[in-house]
Image (cartoon, rainbow, N blue to C red; front, side, top):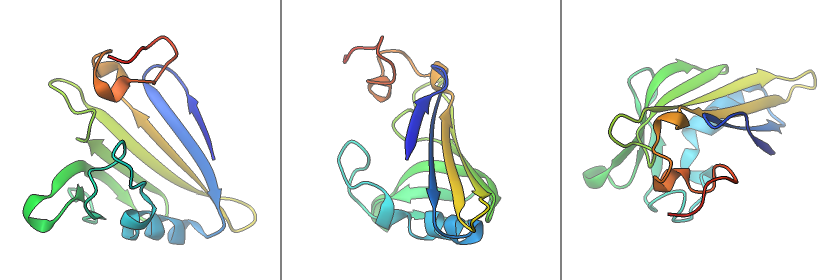
Length: 139
């Protein structure tokens, strides 16, 4: 897996998985609770799930206390998923977006690319920005 900061506005992570694009999309969305890190920096600790389709949500927590982390704006199984992110980066006037692309490789594997963009709208000293660039220091 590789990660790079393409600018101050976007973070991109890419990996190749040994399954076809349709399976990679299904695993990514149907099994999100199994693969998403269970550390306080990455999640509150409750179960995670996607509501499929445009308008669906990425949710974390029990049914009576779920937190919306993102709203699905594009749902193209086996190809692409885009979320209007409402997680930690959500502050007044700050809109970020996460795009996940599933691109078939020649050997029947899939390149999965995750790009979280819109960081320029997030205030420099907001906790979600800590560590994004060497120029930033913890608040």
